[in-house]
Image (cartoon, rainbow, N blue to C red; front, side, top):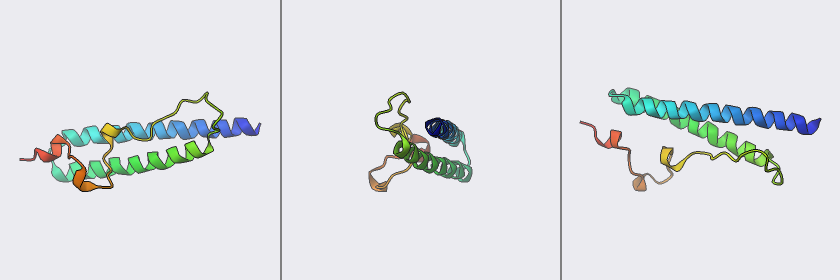
Length: 102
């Protein structure tokens, strides 16, 4: 019974994480289409917020997952191509829509 409860909780966490990833991707796509700089920045900050939530939740999922249990698929935290967070800002290339401002 306890294992079912843990599995159910894990499934819910995975579903929420997936939903937040989709929301983050949607915000990034909207930001790419935005012509207003302030609105674009707001959208990117919201996307970054969702990225942090996803990373934190994924750590919780990974810490609760049984290493012997391979029935559940492994979910990547954040794909490298969509990562808008960076610890070293000087080495980060800005997306074209940011550098091509006129």
